[in-house]
Each structure stands twice: as structure tokens, then as C-alpha cells.
Amino acid sequence: MSSTELSADPTSPLDTPVVADEAARPPLKLDVTIETVSTCQRRVKVSIPRDDINRFHDEAIGELMPSAMLPGFRPGRAPRSLVGSRFKSELSDQIRTKLLTEAMTQAAEQEKLSPISEPDLDIGAVSLPEDGPMTFEFSIEVRPEFEMPEWKGLSINRPTRQIEESDVDEAVANLLRERSRLAPHEGAPALGDMIVADLRVLNGDTLLSEASELSIVVRPKLSFADAELKGFDTLVKSATIGSKVTAQVTVSTEAAVEDLRGKKVTVELTVLEIKKLEMPELSPELLDELGGFETPEALRAAVKLQLENQIEWHRRRQVRQQVASALTASATWDLPPALLRRQSQRELERSILELRRSGFDDDSIRRHVNELRQTVMASTSRSLKEHFILERIAEGESISDSAADYDEEIRAIAAQSGESPRRVRASLEKRGLMDVLRNQIIERKTLDRVTENAKFTNTPFEFPKTDVEAVDHAVCGAFVGAEEIPEATHAEAGEIRSPARR
Image (tube, rainbow, N blue to C red; front, side):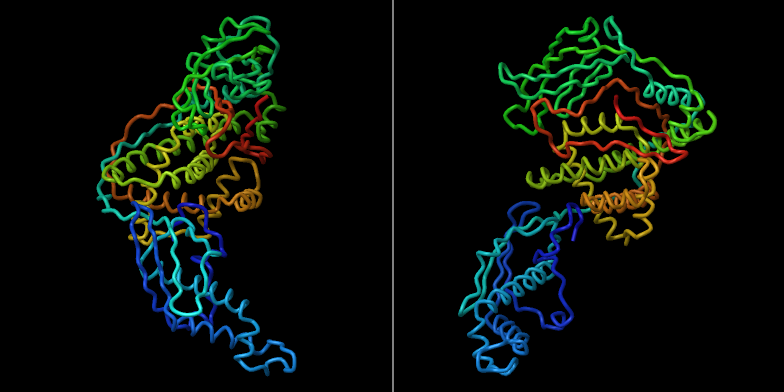
């Protein structure tokens, strides 16, 4: 079964394990009819013949006989016919459940279905008839069938860059800026200053959303979860404490509230405070606070390693985008909107995990996730198509995951987040994200196989400049996908600690 989405409920008919005595049963003589509703949707009708029903009925009575207690009989001594009559209702439910479990599993294998979600079946509406076959229908989403593109010998541009001392200087300066003291300022805010403001978003006279005391760094763009305000630095350049500034933004076409998509709404900010950033000195105390570093050189070495990890992320992202573009160029098949909506949150969570693993700070992650949220359906469609193709390549190349792969991924996330590997694993398991990690592992290994067979041209890489300030707020009042972006905390010695926004 594909792991595109969260694993199905372990009690669902398609996933219930067959016990040893059931495995020895002969297969059911099923009559299966499949209707193709769309690329990924199938309507399946299954008919189980009377002979199989009777066989399951006899087995169920045989299992019950040794423990059946009826008045006038010692346990296990009551006649089969009397046991069948006395426990008819219980036996009927048990037989129906076993038949459904085995029939759906066998139908999936027999018809070579590759489910990507749980079947849509109303079990309560299925009855065990007194005579004749047992018939039921269900809908299911399956992996699409498609012609595989040629994936060997792709021509790919690969961004490369040697980390220079100037790169480390700039990164250390950014770290110090994040640790700057915020001093009250009476004048207008300049680029890089911070304002604290109350936010209101209006559609005409209707209040859509609001937030109190948002801390916002002044940058050219202000990114929301479902909109972007360009020229933010110009908008507030003459603001003073107590003043109000307004601007119009266009709600994303993929915002959570459909009626507001593509509409212009008014953003209203009331400035409560203006703060200047006063850069700190790189003192022994600050070195310790940043991650237990004993010398500035140790900090610079850690920063350089983090920059190399970030370049690797950008390299993999750009290579992946080129591979995905080549692989999905002929993938004109559509995916069900319901699948895209469900999978959009998985896509956001996958992006956060990858960014965490590569050492990006919370501000960078927030900017990327806000950007992704505004085009989440289109990007999810591309990612799913890419996933299905990579999955087929993985199967053909016998690429699989191992326990060591999970340990390596979890160690990498832990090293960047500051949590212990044990706590990271527990958190992923609790949030149901181990399947996301599995997909990440398989896709990364498959991409490595694709790139091993590719032709590369090295191209220069420049670190992107930060001109966007992102806030965790949706102007329309509702989020698409995960609402919270977890912050890195509790760093261990030798790791650069990411400060909370303050």
C-alpha cells in the first residue's frame, strides 16, 4: 500500500492482519466488478458466494462450540444446531466482519489495486443474508496508472558555492541581530526596526480577523498565511506610536475561506510600540547562550557547517525541482480535490521537517511555509504526482527504508531543533508523522538514484536575501493545513540556538 497519506486505521478491513489459522483458508471465490470513476477513484462491487458464507459459518460455530454454555448442557456438549440458533446474532456479526476483512484484502490483491486511503464503506449497511450471496460496494482512492517517463540521463543544473569568510560574517551578524536588545524608539521605524501592533482585517465593514500585539520586523514585504503585503516598509516609514496605517491585500486563491479567495481586503495596523535593534557584543556570556561555544572560532565553525547544510538544502531543492519538472511534464492526469485537500497538510509538515533538518531558523521556516500555503493546492498536486512517479522508480529499483534511515533522519532533526533524538521520535510518533518521514526517506534515496544517472552542469549559487517578514496569521481568519510552526528549543552544547521572537 502506498504511504502517500497517514497509515490507514489498523482495524480497517484492508489492513487487518490475517491470523495463522485464517491464512490456511482457501481463497474466496469472489465476483469483483470495478468502475473507474476518475484517475484515482474506483467504485468496487464485491459478491461473496453462498458456499464461502456457509464455510465461514461452520468455522465460526466450531470455534464457539468448546466454550458455548447453554442451560442443560455442559460447556462444549451442546448440539451444533442449538449453538447456532442460540448465538445467531453474535455469529452473524462475527462472520460478516471476517468476510468483509478477507474479501476486501483479497479483492485489492486480486485486482492489483494500490490504495492510497482507507476505503469508503458503511460497514453497518452491509448485512449477512439468510440465502444467496453477500454483496457490498465501496469507493476507494488508488495510485494512478500512468506511463513512466524516462528518468535516466536527465540534464540538470546543480548550484554550487564555496562558503567564504564573508558568508560566515553575514550569518554571525544575523545571529547577533536576532539577539539584539530592543530599545524603545520615538521616531519612525526604519528598515530592520521592529513595531508592535494590533492587527485588524476587514472586508468592507465586516471584521474577518484580528490579532493583538504582533511583533513585526520592518521589511519590504509582510507575509500572512493567505496574503502578502508588498511595500510594508514604505507603508510604516512615517508611522508613530498610536498611529494607524491601512493597506489592501489580495486574498490567496487557495485561502481556507472560499468566498474570500481573490478578493481585496483591508489590513489595519495600530502601532503600539516602535523598537530599535541594538546589536550586542559577542561576549563569553552570549557565546554560551548561543550554544555553549567557548570561542568565537567555535561559533564560526558551527555557523559554517549550518550554511553548508542550507546550501545542500537549496541544492537538493533546485535539483529536485528540475527532476520533478522533467518527470511530471507528461503527467496530465488529474488528482481528486479531496485528496489534495487532505494531503496539503502533509505537504506543509514535510516541508517543515526538511527545513528543520537543514538548520533553518524559525523565521525562515515561517516565510517558506506562508509562501507554500498561498499555493498549497497546486504545489501539492505537483508533489503528489512526483511522489507517485518516484514511488514507481523506487519499486523498480528495489529502494526501501531501514531502521538506520529513520535513526539518521531523527538525529539530523534533533541536532537542529535542540531536542534529544528520543524526544523527536516520540513527538513524530504522537503527531502521526512517521509516514511523512518514511516518504521523505524513500523520495530522497530515489532522487539520489535519479541524480546518479543524470548529467550535471554546475551553476553559481547565491544565498537568498531576506526581504520578507512572516507572521502566523491568516487574514481570512482560517488556516489551510497546520496552524503552528514549532520553534526550536533546548539546544545542546555546540548547536546554535534559535531564539524565540520577542
